[in-house]
Image 1 (cartoon, rainbow, N blue to C red):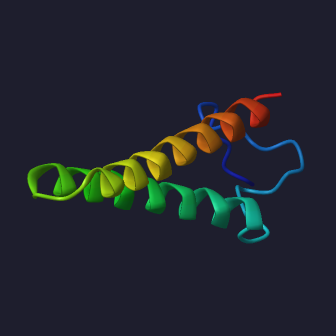
Image 2: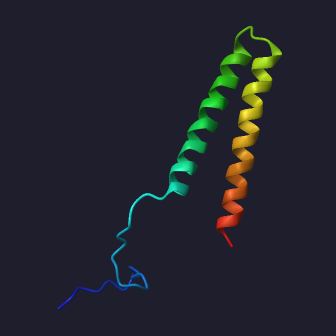
Length: 79
């Protein structure tokens, strides 16, 4: 007899949460998050150092693009 847990929902296809693998969309999401963290850290380092405004603009631009792409992907995935 199979043990059923009333507090653990079972997927509609009957699998127990098994996934087929990593999709390219997952890889892109991870790479965007890594780029975001690196650009934020780089911007902090440049802010504390005596760097020119080009470095600030470069790191800020990368940060803004990463945030925008992540937000757009999140909004599209909710549909």
